[in-house]
Image (cartoon, rainbow, N blue to C red; front, side, top):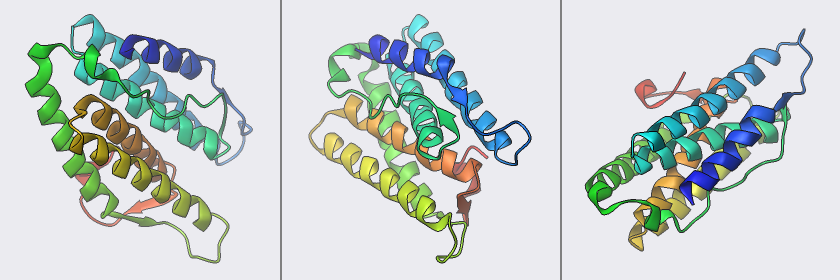
Length: 189
């Protein structure tokens, strides 16, 4: 399932089209989103080739969060691949269970701190304020879903949801919709 998810995401990331004109201020934001999603799609397959399904799943989900943010922001034309598939636990070999546990709980702590470390980079009456609200809502939603999966002892699904959410918040910061007010080390800026 992880490999199939990676293939689907990779295809979407490779076929994505930047829809903002080249001569606009938004083209840099769109380019950054594309580069990040494509880099994490490629990284996921490197992890798979090295028998690291944990980092492969996290990489695919994180990059997919970037891609979906770019689509939602109107920077990119692509079919959203949506939330990572659940049920990936069986794809994680037993010898990686400690790695899965460590990474999942670390991402839960980091994303919790990241959510508390950003604000919307706009005044409420301005047009981009609702975008910041939605970015935060989507990130919180998937954070909550991820922690629920962890509580059910579905660590792989929890990690996928947390990684996907982290892609959203990092893309929000990178595009300038969200602003980091503390803990800048938690973000890909």
